[in-house]
Length: 335
Image 1 (spheres, rainbow, N blue to C red):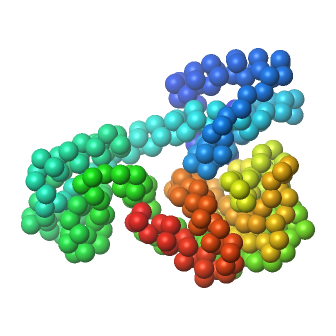
Image 2: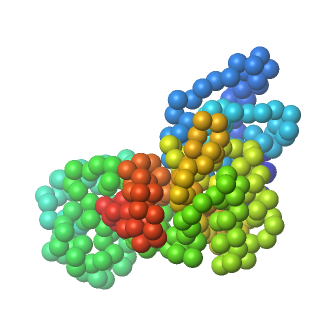
Image 3: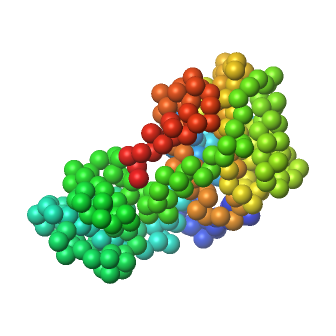
């Protein structure tokens, strides 16, 4: 199972003994439930799919490789395994990154120390945070750091690479720092994945029809072969790509294209996607193979795909221009 993940996602868990132990311990009750036909429910299934999409896909691949066609494993079961993989992915990031961070502000040094301690609790990959008063900042000392954070608006206005944070750290500050640490430095990094040529508004007979429409649009722009479409359909058959009330995010079973992109379909009339579930908005997502940064796109789609009012705004005014406006609004406070 872990070898399949290494091959498909270029992520190596084969030496992660902590993960392997957790998976082995989880397999025992899973097999017992399957044999006795006692399915389990995870009330947080949709939250897991939205916030840990990559881990959910990896868990699907892992369990599919182990069970083959012999067992049908529910998404509820998969979501529990996804949490193990999410934790392992976080540990990989922390082990491979070592960031030098500068915190700048005009507040009392004691206040800035408290802020820095909170940030280090959040992000253990930050080995050290240097603190500097606003009046001592220069271009030369800023260039020595991987990330510059400031509680001072004037500093952010003077140095575009600095990220504004509040001394009263909250969830938006966390996401802003997380984005910057992962290499998403500005809104354009997100917007570049939404291409006007990959936007569709119109009708579709069923989910396979809209998937084919978006696939053909993407094929006209990028070199996509039959393997891409086969992997796309394989994932759709193995897992339910519905997210929330009216959104579906079909994507290949594993990264197979050389480009990362999101093809968007807005439907004039809703179509059935699965039992008791109907869709009007479709994001066909493709992650470029062998691109670790591209894999992180899953994490940073979560503010958009978890914002029901934003998704409704996209559907209610079905134009590319409106979609971009909505996306800009969602991410405005994160950059």
